[in-house]
Length: 195
Image (cartoon, rainbow, N blue to C red):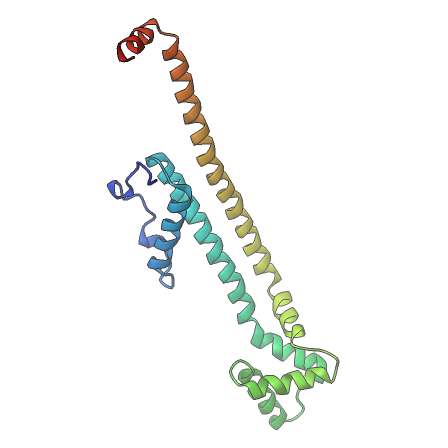
């Protein structure tokens, strides 16, 4: 059963200007459609709540991507720091050049990745130390992003709760109105004419 509310009547969707230039309008529209299919907004008020839900989810996804990118951007420096700690700083220009090439090529060349893994294995370490170094070097930014994600989760739960509360309050209004109408003598006369 489709909702009585036709979302095409109103254009209250979050505008494309809310999206970053790197984000897909189609992906956001898909998220909104899927949420609408699941929640089935019945009127304009529920549609506004639904748009807030979509915005919260989108923002959480954006912040999580940002968190991942912050860590990934720290990898090159982390590789350098790990190698310096494990092997010591390069002693000659040739070693420095080789180390710089290894740090750069680790991202795109499987043989560089294997070479770095081999060097780390000599110290009973693996690439996990690079991840640890990258994450620990960005802990302040990551904590800030985690707080922002948590705030969006709270906002999301409030928006979902608002839809639920709105529907419950509306159902109570209808029930109360029906009870009042049932107590009216004129309703009994109407039933007699219909029956």
